[in-house]
Amino acid sequence: MTGVRRQPKVVNSSIVSK
Image 1 (cartoon, one colour):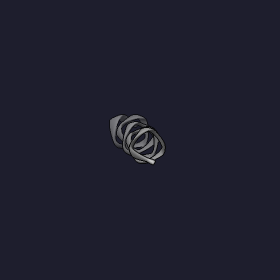
Image 2 (cartoon, rainbow, N blue to C red):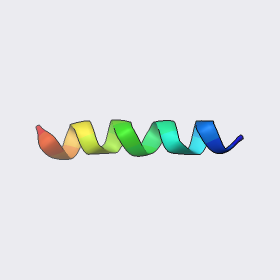
Image 3 (cartoon, rainbow, N blue to C red):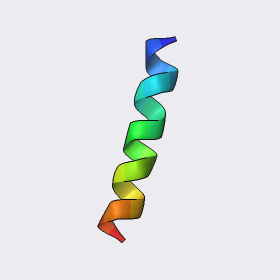
């Protein structure tokens, strides 16, 4: 279940980069 929590963190980074 840790992998699922790490996924959203990467998506957030993409939005902040934009």
